[in-house]
Image (tube, rainbow, N blue to C red):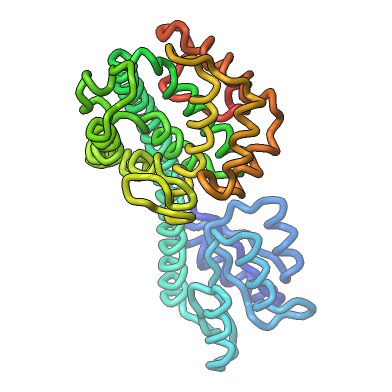
Length: 372
């Protein structure tokens, strides 16, 4: 077995010699230093010691100062102080500053061996604990990485499921095909411009994408009716907000997005439905979505009308600030370059023109991520 290495520090040569002889006879590899400065120099050159045994009273730099240095620069090496001073203050100070034991001079061989054995065992256990902690941190880091990867895969599978749900609605209502994807891209761009965190962006994007999911429960005779709806039919159509909310909120990872589904037809002045919410009673994501929804609705062709230009839609949204829309969000909308929206529409249509194309994802991401 490798011998444990001990550094004995004392300004008195006879004490160093006696301690070195006793410890060598007990099987230790002993090195001596005639003072604190010599010990510090030796440790800088060769720090691989299992124990430092140091006197307290030494000229120039005393043992307690050396102890402070060792605890700072070599915290893994246990230190035992020995001295002829039997002063409770000195002993207490040594322990408080990091010594693992204190030995009074003159000492018996058995006392020295006992103290050294305990100190080296203390150091060994401390090293084992440090190694265990480092290994544990490595294991936790590795497993956290695997968990994060798994969660990302799960999140991607969730978004694929959401896309399937949106596609199911598009198959029923071809008049608004692609609306969910476009309005999600617009909503996400606007939310991103407002400086929202990535987690909020994901929630808002999912809420925007699923905003009309409740229409799956709307009868075809009403959903696909080419003409104007009767008051009774309109009342049934308006139920899609609450029906969508009830569907989506049961899915745990969509619980916050469900609030956007519920409130996406509310208006800032309280004139919307289904609850007549006003101002900040309306979830932020729903207030952002309202602008994106109007933008897409106005600029998309319908069988009964031609879509307007983005410039005209921009004017209408500006006119309705404070009534239908949150005026602060309208300001952010107007602060974005006018061509942003036409570019996003084109990019979204190209991106999803072939759903199986490599790199396509279920939900649009923020503009800067699209470029990356």
